[in-house]
Length: 200
Image (cartoon, rainbow, N blue to C red):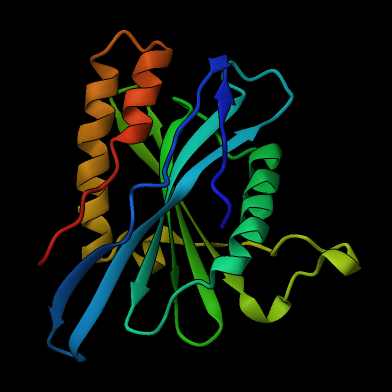
């Protein structure tokens, strides 16, 4: 995926080129040895028109691979378009900062776990979406996005154990931002503070 260059207010350039891949091995008693890999996929920027106080949203993107199951890199631009549509339709920006984790479910279905920080009590607001790779978005047909289906958090749960490591890191990163003066330089520092990974 081509790394996204982002502007918000003053010009902000985030270089993700040197982040590389983060590997972690996790023991799963139900499946034997499973290799899970968390990879940063870039900084995603969304904007919308309207009356909201905060009309922009920055998401740090992560991809979760489990064994041979992972979201194909070539579909991320289409997922990016899909999220822009959700944001335009009313996905709240709240603090304007958050993160997402893309992973595969069983078969051809993928999952987007979208998390946005709220400055009120530093709460984490979450939305889960499912998509189907068999939709095969195609620029030639004019369909450049996936249809995202909301998932009931109460029925499915919020995070797997690997995702919680990302959540823990992102909570600390947001706490640092929250305690700052919240200027452009603080947004840059937050954006560069990505999950470092490690062996489990």
